[in-house]
Length: 264
Picture 1 (cartoon, one colour):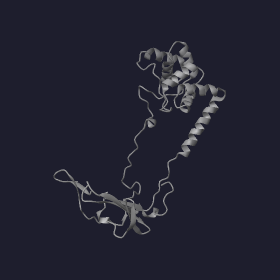
Picture 2: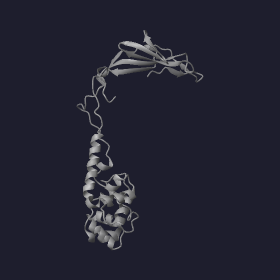
Picture 3: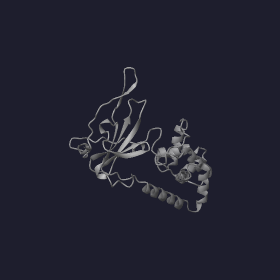
């Protein structure tokens, strides 16, 4: 795109009548990257939450929690979230150590908050997971998460799904996981083309008129080695396209002319 307009001394846009020599073909091969070169350092990717190996003090990495140990601690009168936090802090199954941890931390402000799961879907509300596990009483946290993911996070629908698949809950979850993997395979990103870096001028847009407040725009396109002008409903062969006066130039990669990618 060419800067064809400027602001005059009175702040009024005015058109610049300047002829520009525009090549019919341009070669950008010298600008193509050839990959890492000697002496170049690759900038590392930004770390995401999933790349971080150490959890924060407020949210430690969650490990496998013994469901029986959770039930045993809850029978002593402690809340489910606090029990899970305690077991997570002591390795997942030692009730005695978990009891000691509870006595030391039951005054923490986040003691009864749900413990986030690094491996869970971020769209799943862990508070809903904890509530369903506690209220339903016969499903694990992973089973509830799978049901919520299948039901778009709706707790009532997830409960119905769990009870309707009680006979083979693990098999039903395995089917959901397989469906998710198949979906990801079918939505793989398209392979990008890489070709020669030479481009040919195939179109241009120009303005007919003395200033921005009058006139209109017309387009010229190259078709079968001829230039064609498109002026509103009028289409005709153009003997002398206004290449030096256009403000927008369109180039197409030469090796793609006549053989475009089917996804274009």
